[in-house]
Image (cartoon, rainbow, N blue to C red):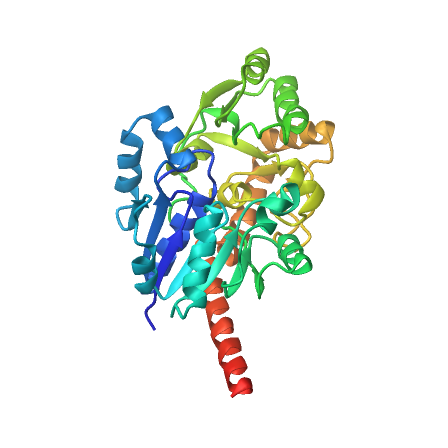
Length: 373
C-alpha cells in the first residue's frame, strides 16, 4: 500500500550543525524508492538554515535542491494550516526539535480523530542532559516514539513518555556515501565534526589533535562553531582547519584522505551507550578506515574488525601509525566496515524498519479495538 509520509523537521534543507538532516534525506529517498510519497516541513527562521545561509550564502539552499531534486519540502510560518497538511498524510513523524506548542497541537489533531499514524522522533541526548525539556512535551496523542538507540528507548519507557517506543538508529545514505576507488589521497587524516559546545573538548585534544601533531600527519578538519582558542590550537598543531562543509561533499573529503577518527560527545558515552551518532555509519560507508575514541557498542551494531577502538591517546596514536604504514591492514579494515554497513546500516534498512513499526502499530491498534468491542 502506498503511503504519504509527512516529516516535521528542524530543517531538511540545512545540514549546518544538524546531522539529522543527513538521515532524513536518505530515509525519504529510500521510502520513495519503495513507492511512498514524502514531504518535509521546517519552520521559518530555523536556526540551522539561518546559520547555513550566513555561513555559505543563499546559494547553499540551491545546492541542496540540485543534489536532492526529488525531495519535497516547504517552510511554514505562523499562519500555516497544519491541520490541512496532517489531513493529507498517512504517517506523520515529528522531530523532537519541533516547537513544543506545535508538538502538542499535532497530538491533539491525532487524538480528535486524525486518520494518520503519529510518531515522535528523538535523535539527541536531551532526554538525559535536559530532561525537563522532553518531559514537558505533550505526547499523549502520539501513537509511538522512535528513539535512535536502545538506551534512549529505555529512558522514554522508564519515564512514561509515549505509548510505545521503538529503537530506530540512524544510518548511511549509501547512494551518496560510497567509496571512490579512483580518488587519490591528498592527506593522511580527516575529521568531520563540530566543536561540540564543551561536550568533547578534552576528548578532541586527546584522541585527535595530539596524535595528529605527534605523528606529524597531514590533517584536515571540517566543522563549525570552533572558538578562537580551538582554531589557534589547531594552527599550533599544524592542522588545516577547513571550516564548514556540505554533507554532500563529505564523501569526497573521506576519499581524499587515508584514515578518519570518531570522537563521540560525552553525554552519549556516559549516559546513552550504544548510540554512535551518524558519522561512523557514513565514514564506514565510504570505505575509509576508522579509529574511534571509547564508546560502548552495547547493541552490537558493529563487528570486531569494522573499526578500531582506542582506549586512550597513546592507543589512538599507535592505531593511526599502523593503519597509515600498513596498506593491507587499512584495506582489510575498510572492507570489513563497508560490508557491515551494506548488510545492516543503510537508510534502506531504516526505511524498512519504519514500515515494520507501522505494521506493528496497525496490528496493535486492531487488537485493542477488537478486544474492546
